[in-house]
Length: 196
Length: 212
Image 1 (cartoon, one colour):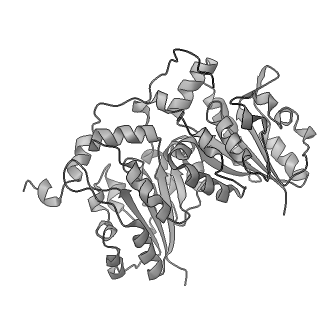
Image 2 (tube, chains in turn brown, yellow):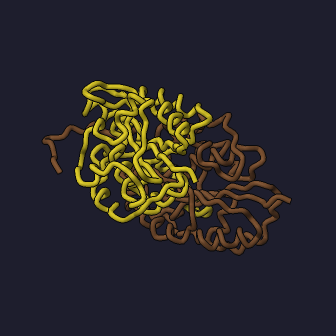
Image 3 (cartoon, one colour):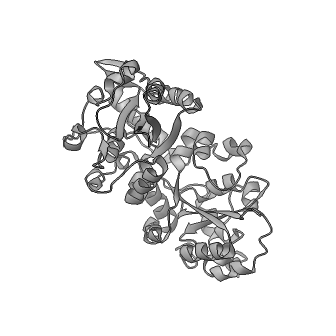
């Protein structure tokens, strides 16, 4: 029997977690974040494995009756405005999945760090990307997902990633129809030539 | 094991010099030496420059790993051209070398603004058109490099790129290239976005959302 496969996508708040979740949850054979494929936005506290992020041992109690799984963890999750901010136990989460017998692939999301800082500050009053940087060393051999590459090269880029679950490409262009970076970009007019 | 040719290429202003430097750092790599000591070097002084115009002349010095870089389009001897990357790859295969192409990506909004400012026109579409042909060639192994991922994840991202490209990389000396983020000057705050409040509400507990 083939080993069950799970793709775990994780990354800083605002780095494309929802966008990638829609893409990786879209294939009929993948048990992922199906609610997000029907709505524009759903809170991370409704992600199917959300309850296991802080208590990964709960993963042992799941039925796991599919061949392919997808999950997404934003780090941190929970706002600093209302409620408590929390850091998912990513490495323990992966360890438990491997113990259950999964072939686990971990993908880390990226987006321009200047935009990340501005967006996180606007929403949560403070940049939070460093919270993810603190846990990155605990993740062994992740692949990296680039939001900017996704927008520019679309299906070609996603195919190049060689993720361990099937992907439905038919709806990809709808998922990435808008460019969330565009509103942050301004023209830059140098006042003098800086020579190094 | 076949000798390897890594070609890093991107639209003008996407980070060609940056990634050429990074992949030239490892002592086992025959790369763009001049870039290690100069902040900027014209593209037609890159060691493989003439082959982008005359691929039939392709020749390799001693070594096992070679790094070449070219933007699309690029200037050679004062003339703007689209480099013949596909032909260089086929010529390299013909000579018994294993070519791999890594396409550099930078945020398309920033890349366009920079091209307009520096060169007076946006050439991103020229590059995209050429890369479409390149990506359609089933004999050429092609990957992507992200400018933004490098500045965010630094050493971890370079290690990942080395693994994916099967090319020797080192993090030594990379710090000198990450003192400044070239994107920063193009990014400005957005006061409020329509989704912000929805997301903040979603971060409340179920009890809080029900109005307690």
